[in-house]
Image (cartoon, rainbow, N blue to C red; front, side):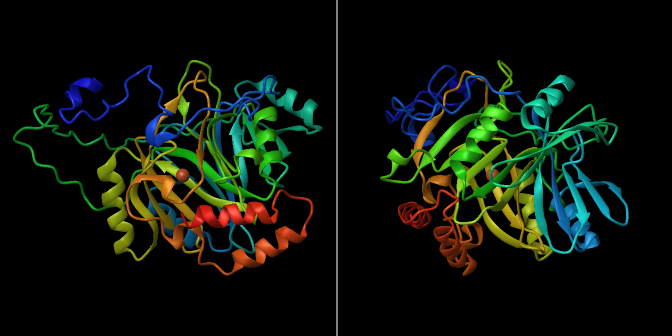
Length: 387
Ligand SMILES: [Fe+2]
């Protein structure tokens, strides 16, 4: 299939990678791990979670949250005076649980357990308690960064909603469409599902190891601070271990930052036209664009980032990589330019680089001895943000 779409490269450039070749080569990442480096997985995790179930937020204005939600491409699954549930179109739990609260903030993620027994194992291993939750069961944990992490099982799924099919595309002589025009509409996206959440933390290594040891997640790609590979990774793209079943390249992305908090979350759309045309719709509605369109390196997604009215960042994506458990982590230096293969230069709106609160957080993090932020790390992060 790949060779069919990419006939012989007459200019002698490398042929696109096919199955069985190392996808960590070239742009994706330079190298695999060196001896003694972080293996990117636990030899004996407590459980192996099956996926990311939903994300929980607090917002003071649920009407406003609902307007952004439907403009961004969610469907309202339920609304009470104090809770808003936003869903995608695939059969699953709601992607977003938004509770009325005093200020807009991310609370934490919920992961789906592979089996009911896993909740008992987690409760025994962490001192937690299994409770009834929304028709199923849940155990509430806390990661070393302080995020409450729910692991759930047996919660009834919302049924599939009909959704758009990918547009039929003509590729050179491969014609999928004759005597038919292409007219994708500028309208709200149809979100298929929740893809991943990205978090910043001042306790990167401790939190990374917790997700690998407790939830059995495995690393797809590590980034390190340029010139500081000796201190280990400073960012990780982490997926679920589903054995031979391919899983999203990352379900969780986590980076060492001067402040612990939510960076963004990402939602899958059907194709590139859907990402671009629904972005035009958001632009026409006056929402703040953060970065895009482009194609990432780690995960390969075609991406477009937006901020909601509370300045929380949300990503539309399509065409992401999926890896089975056999894939070992790649290693590459961390830089803003290294986040995309193509697309516009990443903006301060995306990186948060123009925000004066970053300086205050950095000073606070340096004073606080209970984290992994030191002057050398800060210098590395500043270099990464500007390279
Ligand atoms: Fe993302």
